[in-house]
Length: 89
Image (cartoon, rainbow, N blue to C red; front, side, top):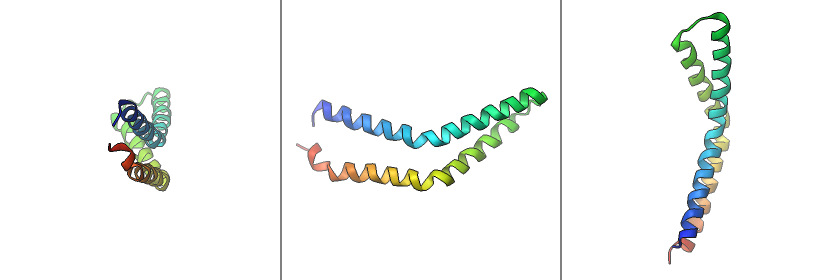
C-alpha cells in the first residue's frame, strides 16, 4: 500500500466525518446562538437553559438527518470494501 493511497483514504475518511457531523454541529450552533441572545436580553444566566435546548436540537437533527447519515456512511463503507483488493499488494 503506497503512502499516496493511505493519505487519500485518510482524506476521504476525514471528509466523511466532517460531512456526517455537520448537520448536528450547525443546528447546535444556531440554537446555542439563539439561546445566548435570549439570555443576554433577559439577563437570565441559567446553565441548563443553554445546555438542554442544544441537546434537544442535536437529537432532532439526528432524527431528521438519520436516513441520510446512514446512507452516506453505508455508501462510503461499501466503496471501501469493494475496492479492498486495490489496497492489498
